[in-house]
Length: 429
Image 1 (cartoon, helix red, strand yellow):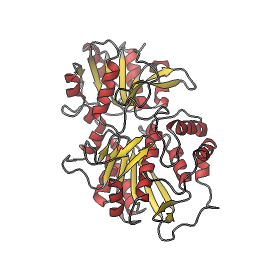
Image 2: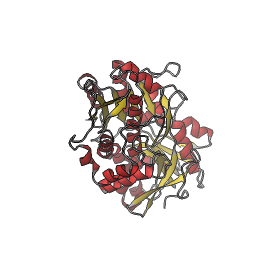
Image 3: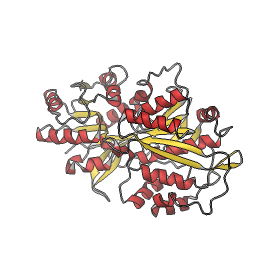
Image 4: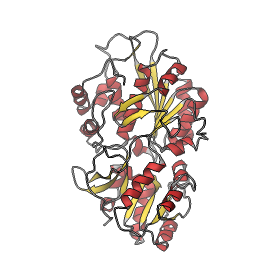
């Protein structure tokens, strides 16, 4: 593992984050060390800061601000200190916009490494632009199958410039069915799969939920694909009621889940379990449901309970979540850890680069990454395909009460016993 030459102590990191470090991160350069004169390293970062996917980027300002503060002394490469500039772009939750801003970062800003997060609608077009242009790209917060296969990835060949870390559909299916197995149901599942990258991957007859659920003895009621931002789920609710569905699953954007769940209550559809990706990741989305969010369940990819530390600052997962709340007065949210980890991997790659400013040398360093991050160990070359590194996944439920309206309680850790549970699975009241 590589370590930063100019790295704040854990205590200093917490002081900065707890006292509004967004402002500190953008402060002047007085007292900064002398930099190498010949190169400014630029990192591009793309995420959906506005639009229906905006909850994924809610903590971006905080995370990027903290990284800027950690890097204000530059990054040491080969005995020289180089300044680092982070250029942030908003995809506006639109794949075409994501491709456009990625192209701007490549052509105009001449970024050395591209970073991108949050759903295939953002990660895929940005990754594609980097693959075409020959720019090293690190992506996350999208299951690996829709990132890899939707882009035409061949497991025998992989991609050259684009690398990804996250979990896969096999992991979330295991986590969800582990949670479901803790309660008595008729094993009938209703699927909410939109017509987008995630929805088509989750509902795929070969690689998605259908074959695995059938193998595990579940019956899947799939009413077909729907368009994001729909305002009427009556057809899906009717199909679920007719099929005797007691478990609802799917990958739904936050506003659509709010619409579906309110209409389900109005139409007296009351399943025992609802385990949903995307929409139930964020406290702000669950809070919009009022008290009807109790015991809704979701995958948990990062939390204050995760026993990992940042290679960049030394802060633990608990430290980072606490600092976010102190700085913003908001509840922690899962993307905090993974966005931070993107920058961990990028800086670690730069520190090992043999020729600063050479994209091929940067790519060579990236492919050799073996790093303990705030989301776990990241190393490529261990499968499932050469461009993907998998991270741990557990399951949780939202419970009313605590410092905020809801608390996300980990109720299943069978896939990652290193992450402790905080409660047991309960049916929806």
